[in-house]
Length: 458
Ligand SMILES: *[C@@H]1O[C@H](CO)[C@@H](O)[C@H](O)[C@H]1NC(C)=O
Ligand SMILES: *[C@@H]1O[C@H](CO)[C@@H](O)[C@H](O)[C@H]1NC(C)=O
Ligand SMILES: *[C@@H]1O[C@H](CO)[C@@H](O)[C@H](O)[C@H]1NC(C)=O
Ligand SMILES: *[C@@H]1O[C@H](CO)[C@@H](O)[C@H](O)[C@H]1NC(C)=O
Image: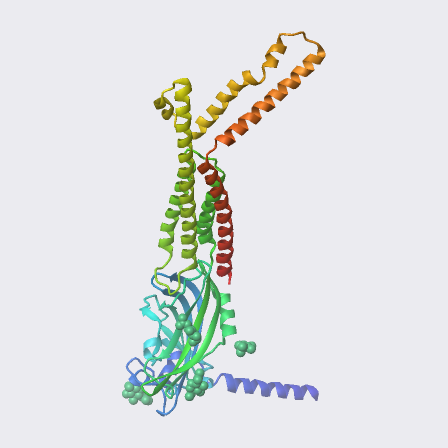
């Protein structure tokens, strides 16, 4: 009884399936095209906006996803993203019942068979000649989907004030070229969150730039009393600064450190001067690199230019200060030398000319000191000489060694005092200037660096 009922229901189900699924034996895509009368010679589908009533609006849905950042050129202010765009609109002339065509719900057809929306990218400055997908897909309900891979050469206003720690925002604005808002609407499919998420998933190459987010917005603009709808995709990208830091910022800092360290080179012969000039020249070589990487146009002076110029200026000032100090020291030693020579002329009948040949202050000073040291020895400590000839008791030996020590001490003291006394007025000034300038220089450098790095960070 129950088996018979089961058999009956199974048979019924089978019948339903048979009558529903196998209404026709074989269907081809061409059957659908024939049904639609969609042929290459049929211009009905190509020429005009596909609406059956001219008051109908064509709604174009748009999705744009970033695939790669192919180039960002600050000098020409161009941004070249590689995007994937999906456009979807409704063609009122197309519709069929999939049930009548073995369930065929969509067909792909060549692009040139159908009308396509005349979308325009405002920022695009160069035609894209990369290979394109040549087909689009039509659905039974009249929805047409078109995929495109676009290399967009777009113009983008870039602000390089914070180079190389900058973030840029470049827009791609899409609107219809001819159809105003009551004829065509353009609606983004994904919101900003979704578009950003999707772009992060598919992005392949980023190179120097890191993709941060994609913001989708839509606005209406009017022109000649007509209104258009425009969808704007704003790509926010951030530069990876590492290369520029290693290539440029750090070397400049190193040279600055070298310049600071050069204050500890004791110099009376101009070695310090040549060292500083070398460091300054190295910085100017780096400035050439900067010229290559930085675009000339910018409303505000780029921070990196300020960084370079101020450091260059600081080093220049320090070089000038060294020149001044060297000059003062030179002048002093010259005076001393003249004084010494006239003194020697009187006492020793030494030729002034021979003295001028060795006209370097430091050697002259030390020579004078050692010379006078030798002379004074005999006069100041005659006891030692005499004591050397006497009897050697342990006490006298101890005394002698103490005397020896005292003698050394006296000599050193005398040498020191003599040299201090002989050091001239301008030499003293040079020392003071040097010390004060070093402190000033160090403070300025620290203040400036903290200022500029704070600016870069903000
Ligand atoms: C199909 O298109 C051709 C060419 O435009 C036309 O001559 C023909 O009448 C159309 N057939 C139907 C059924 O619409
Ligand atoms: C990009 O588009 C946004 C939103 O429409 C706008 O606020 C911004 O100024 C545009 N940026 C540029 C560089 O045109
Ligand atoms: C964006 O769209 C996703 C789904 O596509 C939705 O979950 C999310 O809430 C939307 N975000 C905003 C800010 O509208
Ligand atoms: C643009 O105009 C359309 C139709 O008038 C309106 O629905 C839409 O909200 C407008 N969009 C904006 C951003 O004002």
